[in-house]
Image 1 (cartoon, rainbow, N blue to C red):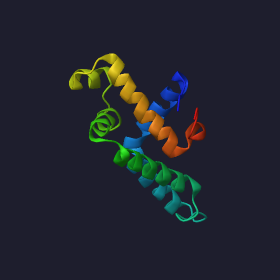
Image 2: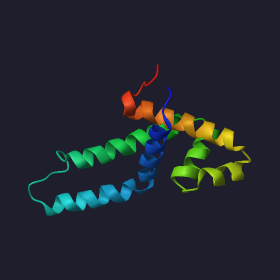
Image 3: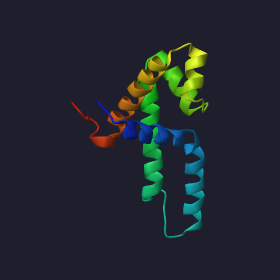
Image 4: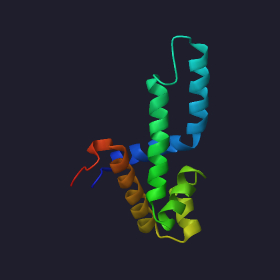
Length: 119
């Protein structure tokens, strides 16, 4: 899969939302409780939040130990790519190659950009 720079940036930003997903789910549940016309079982927004959470958890579990650590440093600990490279002693080219691998796997797992873009 070969994603464009814009597609990679979009996916990177999308994964930034992952660390706040438990909060987003809790807020949506409260909103549903306050609206008598809604139920958790039929709420599309809540289902999409859960789907995002499940997809990212499956992605993380599918990564090898090294990529999983990079994933956690970026999207859990909110380190920049430069900071991750410095901490892991990676050259810029190496860390961005790892970024691309993780984001391509996410695109496939989520079906974003066709999921098998470029194959």
